[in-house]
Length: 222
Length: 253
Image (tube, rainbow over the protein chains, first blue to last red):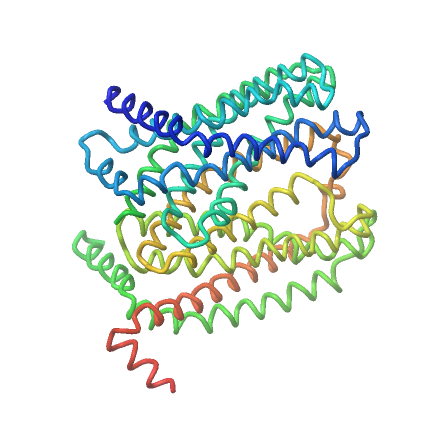
């Protein structure tokens, strides 16, 4: 089973490397959305410092959701997904592998990009470090919850907007704890509680979400 | 009761899982629940708007809670009921359960909307603003979004069976998430501001409790009547190829 999961991760990563544009576009989208915030709000450093964590998290949410299309749609179109459903390995495990690969090419680079963005928003070193940690702990849950929506809307017209409508409300707790961690540091408090809750959310969703994704895929491919 | 009699009564109840039987039963029940809702609503509103004393702190504006609180309760409760029936439909593959879940969603969304709307009207004189990012307001708004997501997903899928199952998965994911969302939003709010915004004192007069209870039961019976009525339409629509449904429609016309 672990070998199969490894193969799925390897294959999806290989596909991502071969189709670099998909991955790069997601990251560019993330950077552009974050850049829009100062243009809309104004360049006042104090304001920017206050809104930075929220802006980065909202942009990460949107980037993660827009890239979900890639997760199952291509495999669905060329029939690979049906083959994956027919294998002896548990579908939940295979799905977990696919989501892990998705996180490695979106969540992880987004986390890394938070460092320069933190500097651009004039965050302190501790705040930037907390933002990076929060993204590291929180983005896996974004990918997992988003995958449920992607699986449910597989092959539907207007799927992209629909996924956002389904998934964004579910992501509220991650947004709150993620941005809250950085604000706690700004207020002179320890971000530990927020970070631990984020990690807990990611761990719990990594246990429960694969079953929901697997069930959703079976329904969509019936 | 002997075991055979119990089994027989069980079979009797399951009879109504057949859409045709359910349609007939619901048709008989709807007028009763609607009538009870109307009577309770009129009495409850009379007590709430005229008989109950004026609140010492909030004046007359507090009276909207007689609509606001029952609606908020129903909004939360109906989501759980909807997820329950959707889950039953997913596990046991029963057609009627999914139809019920479908029929509950609009009423639940309406309740969430009423709770938000009346909350805004109450907030203006009390807090000085139609909307504040209070924990309860925000979580109710997210609940409304969850209802909308359920309805949107169901209507986006043409194949009804797939729509039922997919939205059932969504409802179950949502019902696990609702408490997490609720507590995270509460924490988010308390981190930002203290408990400066809280409804007036907890001790309320006995007549207010009576009015509130009557309104709660009125909302309950209204919700049951509305859901059963909508479920009848859903049943007719989905069973349109069956003889009994066509006969029923022909008789009505």
